[in-house]
Length: 103
Image (cartoon, one colour):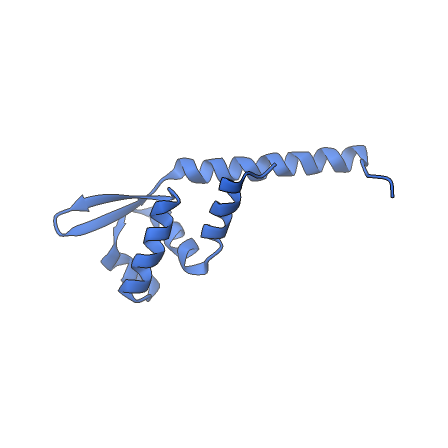
């Protein structure tokens, strides 16, 4: 069963810009300047999305001089993937046993 934390994480990642950020960070650690260049988003908008991702535990910050770098926290995505994998396994078992509730 999906927990509220899993549901919240799905909601966080459902935003197209946040998903784009996560995809970019899967390939390399980037600072806000790089993310602005890559996404075309305004810096303030991007910072708000990064805050949401940080609060959800999806990204970590790494100060480097006057810049802040962001890197993906893969364990959070692994946990989300495991939730979907469990859900798929349950659905597969349900389909195989033809389990259905009587009306």
